[in-house]
Image 1: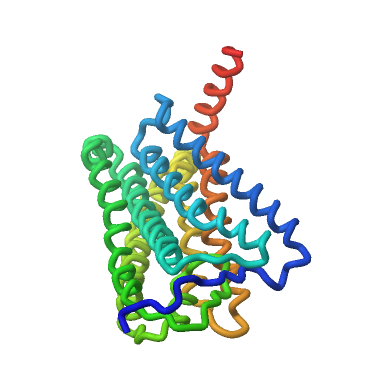
Image 2: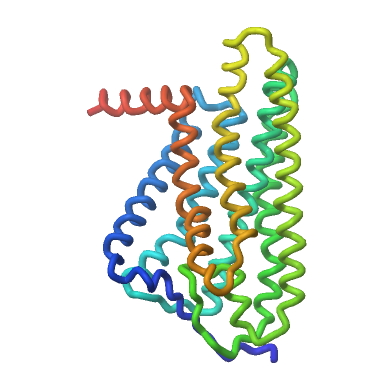
Length: 309
């Protein structure tokens, strides 16, 4: 029972929207291109601009890279599935897609946690901020975020490779999410589900509680500031991160709450779209529109380019 009978899966995609597939294809293509452009632009600006060398932008560059990874892992194949009214993917390719999806999602969660700690230090302990959040600590937090993201995702991948798939071979989704894949297995999936539930709970709830506590301390510190201008300035330094956290965890918790079976499968697809397509689009928009330093660095960059022309 350790061998795989079925070697390929059929991704259905959005079969109920076939009459609008061209419109949907171009809509998601535009979103994907804007997402890539926005996140890559942030990565370039953070890497080259002297204005954006603070710890917050260091973490932002890695968050943008994880956005690029998660959307590139899902959207190109999804566009093919939309145009072809379905798509074939090998079992190995399906498991590989889930691996990069899970690794990048876990890394994002840990990076947002590191960014919340950075904002906590900047507002609640400003005099020691630069000393504590030095280059060594920044590298330490980023390396551990990426390492844990990939290491923790390897565990369910190990169990997935040991499953037996004997039919059916149709996944009613636009990418290889874990739930629809497990439903096709003829093996006992209780071990995989328990392991994934345990890791997902730890990697979701613990960072969420930590982020919540840091913002409780941040808000209490901001309320102690006497001047209105000072309070607004302090809050503006963490408002972008708070908006991204709300978007990220809103989509993430919705994926846990919405069931993946029966009539709710279309709702599950919409929630998955929010997490894999919309959220990576919102992150650079939120940070670009709400951060003057990024706008100034972008303006200087465009001005240099124009002068060269």
